[in-house]
Length: 215
Image (cartoon, rainbow, N blue to C red):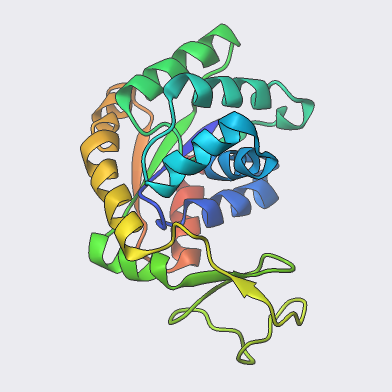
């Protein structure tokens, strides 16, 4: 089963994708994580990606599709994949469909996680993670049980993503509405689009998604 989770930054796509990995044996393909790995490796391309990401802009379509094509060719993706963060434009959606068709694959579901912009800015700017184990937290919604100490591993070191600030999030939201929202009717026309309430409780969102997949 091959899925796309759509929604602006902070909508919860990554959280739901990880749950689907555990329950259905799918592989989460987070283009954000893939790009950050590229930046960490350095080199001219990594530096270019770093500058683009820091400005809250979109990566070149060809680079993204080639990166995904290579990844889904690996053996661990045999049960299917979950795309998180791609596509973001109609051109990318068309390029993705073409690449999948060439590989004899297709998209089974495209799920939009609908959110409220103002609430989303608060959600994103307040999040941080344990620097050791990666457990996620939030200044308001999910604090460690003991202040300054990770619930999972006991580490006292935490980190925040550089692009989790109000200015960058607002820029990315504007881009989402201007460029990504038009792909919704594209996928609706293909009969694969469904919508869930991305502002609902995490477990409720999971139930909504599972109901779609079981339908």
